[in-house]
Length: 317
Image (cartoon, rainbow, N blue to C red):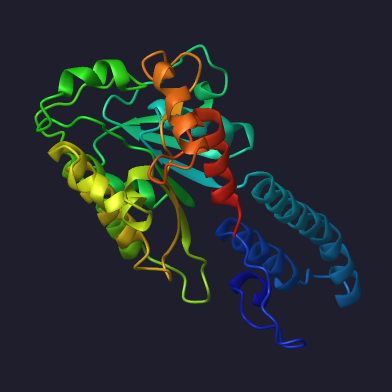
């Protein structure tokens, strides 16, 4: 039981490896097999009765212990359960592919709840959940069954920007904002709901590790930290300022609960691949400005590189 419950070992006083609940039950079953009373049949000596009873029980014990071993092997084979908020989006779907390829059990939450590439063998293994991350109850349920979370919900032009029609072009998933699609709701509220759900989740009292949470922010969120960044932001359009307010609020909140959350924040510049024709003309311009040292312009990044970085952050403690 000290092995199952992660209590100190009486011999070495060191922590034992915590087992899954299923393994605890199987180990208790094995103990029951060993400790069950031996029946004494009429006309049979106690020694014979013990010997006759032990033979089948030894077989049961071997079966129970084999089941424990197999359960442990299955547990180790899967890195864990990953929840991707916005898994059918431009970045989210790439994260889903990588996670499935590495053995994760992946659930995606999005408003449409649809596989964006039904022909893709990896994405076919994702559990596609339809729902709104702005609904706290939905997140509480899904977070309760996740070992790690990736927040990849993004919106470039919200309903107040006056540029919502451009989302059809710039959105990697072809997402179209509705009347509730503001930066505050889409970015801040969904992330705050996630953080609240993680804080309210029942945690084991003997050293459960913080939950990894990967958040896709934006390079411009770091403008106050670079030369001339504040001056550039001062003359930025109002929609961009609101966009950055929401991103920075999430960054700050994620960092406020290190006992519950292990955050990794990603601040990409323009994200692209060769099919993203809407941003391709801007890629050499951004990269050139970054190369000559313009402090507030970051080098662009491919969606593949960003997704691999997110997986690295997820797995690197």
